[in-house]
Length: 345
Image 1 (cartoon, one colour):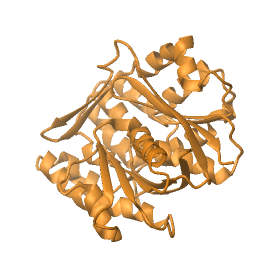
Image 2: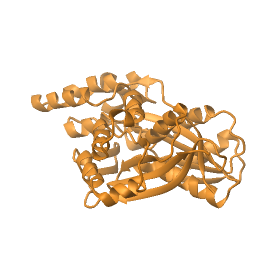
Image 3: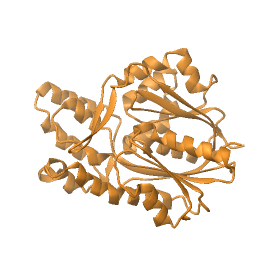
Image 4: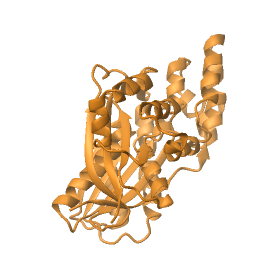
């Protein structure tokens, strides 16, 4: 029994903030050479747009949300509690009529609230009181894989199940008022977004053929995510792309990722231009192989766990025939997690 990703719908907030962030961040870098580095990396980021649930003026004008010392973690979580379910429900609404839902799996790493986003969504949708809920939290960018993998196992064990999978991330809530160029370059990547998918045994969309996980040795400190007094603090080392490329050069790791067969379709988490470049070089891919991932990076930036769902949604919309596809994301650990995909029979 194969589980299938039948449909995916996505949503981003209305506030475009990428250039506003660059204009806000640049004068915070005092050293002239570091400021030139920040400007050069921003120009080369491959990102054109990023979106935020926060209004533009509320974010940046006169210090705004981030410059105000009252922008505590508690305040950011109050915004999350309202805006995360709202954005998630917008994505779900774009799925159309999805029938009876037996299970709800929600991934969200950028906030905490109880009752959880899963319960808020279930009530808002009027799902049955006995709907089985799973909440995947704080796993970072590969949480979408964990959510889809959970749905995969549910459907394989309960063939009549219809699983609603939701990823929602409000990354921009956690921007820090800092002049550290490495921190600003990390924050340059992230935007807000949500995605929703139906996973069932119905042979429509992409069949999930397998799942895999690979922890990269001696790299656990390269991506870290800490709860601070002023939001969640991301530590993203510039070594990450190189370590990914090094890991993917290992034949054993390559076999884990590809399943030992030629891959005809790639859905790579758009974690940044250099990450996509590392995957492209490691597998000697033609430029068009990661077009879907690069388009999402340009249009929306890195939305943590929601990003890969955006890439998969784009590939589904293309209606291409997939015989051996790979969906892969990288996150804290440093680890790679993924799924094998093929078009429904």
